[in-house]
Structures are given as structure tokens and as C-alpha cells.
Image 1 (cartoon, rainbow, N blue to C red):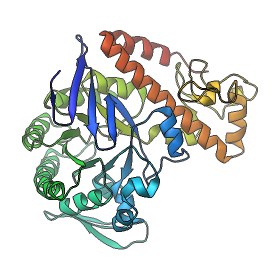
Image 2 (image 1 turned 180 degrees about the vertical axis):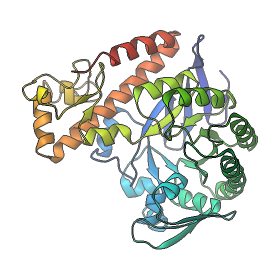
Image 3 (image 1 turned 135 degrees about the vertical axis):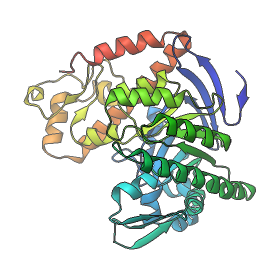
Image 4 (image 1 turned 90 degrees about the vertical axis):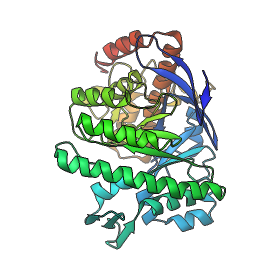
Length: 391
């Protein structure tokens, strides 16, 4: 299929909206659909960069709000951007920090100019505008940066949602103007706009049209998976995704469980991210092909089998992400339970690696099913097995 901009559609499942593609970014090409691990403070918790590379990830997400506060974007610029600062040589996507400002800041005041907030780190009063969000992310040398937006929670009134969505559009225009200035100065990162509108279809339609009109390299759907039911999520996702340009990469922000990922892909979403896989791993929840398991349960005390017999990760099989031999036969559920109960650091490393590998493998299988024109059957069969119980 014809490529326009940074995205090339490669195949479309005939029975659904699922599609595969290729994303062209400064630090390497990506196959889509793609899941992006979240590294809030420029690190995916408990997972070294070489482990992420071994699994096969080509992009991770870092958080502008946290890095803006600590260590600061100027220090990161001096270090050579996020790539120089962290040693991760592949792509970075950075969110604008808008969601964290509204969810973490103790004090926040919204205005046309931007948002003033009190840092959750030290209580200092801070201000960020759409232009400053672009400047900070350019200092990070982000491969994809997100506009500053206003995210509203489930239950927001239509009047408040409309005001937030309109402000997001005005901020997107200002962000684009500043981003183009940075591009003229040699910055290669791509700016994505964000569709808002809460759970009001007319607002979603208006926002999608306004953001699409800006003709930015990519477009994201914000304000979903914020407390609504899965049924409402699916309905608004389908409605919003259908409004987006087909020749742009589509990014659904903040999802990271198999059911949500499959729903997103079915609606033509190309990119998604979430802290969920690593956060729940550290807290004892592990993905398996037959559903998640809580490793702390007593039933695993003498279970010497792997987390998931069908998983090929080094934790389960002893093989690395490319099929090479490591220690065999891998680590048992009993041993992982022991590590978890003893609060050993190794547990977080192994559990996080496994959950990320599981999702990366799942998305790879999803891409294969789309290429074969069998996504619908794959989704049905996967979810049936996933609901059967991992114990």
C-alpha cells in the first residue's frame, strides 16, 4: 500500500478493521500494531535496556511530567537527549505530561496559556504551556512527542468535556507551530495530536475533525480507559477510531491487557502503551495463555512448572528472546513464589520480563493473524483460552 508520511499500511484483515503497517522513526522502523512498554522515569522498572532489546522492543515510552520535574529537560539535553542519558538506542515516545498534571499534582490551575501546578516531588510551583511541552520533549530528543492536552475522567459533564476538548485543540495548534520551528532547527521527532471529547460522540467527532485537520504525523485517542466499563470503552473506541485518517498511525493511549489490546487492534489501532504489565508483575500477577495467575497463592508452593508452558521467554523456557539457550529449563512457579514472598529484587526483574515478553509475543501473533486474514478467529480462540483459568 502507498506510504504517506511516517506510516505505511501493509495489510488489512477483510472482516475487521485490524491492520498491519510500518512506522518510520528516527531511531528505527517499527512493525505495527505495536505495544510500547512504559518507562516513566526513563527506565522500564526492573528491566534493563538490553533485556528490552532482547525481547524485541523498538520503542519505549517515557513521561514528560516526571522528567521535567526531575532531573529536568536541560540536564537531559546536555546528556545527549534521552538516548544519550539512558543508553537506549531505539525509539522513545514521550507523553506531554498533561495526564500526570491532572492526576498527580496537588494543586493545578488551568488557563488558556497552559497549566500551573504544584510538583508532587517537592511542592514547588511549576507552569507548562503547549510550547514548553514541545521544547522539553525536543530537549529529550523524543522520536515521538505528544501535544499538551486536557484529559477528563469518566463522569465529566458535557459542558466541561466540551471546554477541555476545545482547549486541547487550541493547544494542539500552538504545539504544531512550535514543533515546526524545532523541525526547522534540525529536530527530527514527530508530533502527534490527541483526540479528546470524553464519552460524548458529538464532541469526539468535532475533536477528531479538528485534530485531523492539523495534518500532524500521527494522531492519538485520549480519554479512554479512565474508569468506564469495557462495553462503553469498546463503543466509544469504535466510534472514534472510525473518524481518524487511514493514512496516519493511530495511537490509543493507556491500554495494556490482552482483551483491551485485541479490541483496539480490531478497530484499526496501531500503537498502545500501559504501565499495567510491569506494575502488576511487581505485585504478583503474571500473564499466561490461560489467563493471569497470582503467584503468591499457596497452590504454587510446590508447582515446579514454568509460569506458562506455552511461553518461550527466558524465564519460562530458559531461552532468550531470540531463541538462544540460556539456563534451562527456566524458573519454576514455586521459585518465583518464593522470591516474591521474600521480596527479592530478582522477582521483579523476572516477572516484569515475562509479562512484557508475553505481550510482545501476543502482538506479534496478532500481526501474523492479520496478514493471514484470520484475526477474528485468532481473537476468539485467544480470549476463550485466556478465560479458561491460568491455574
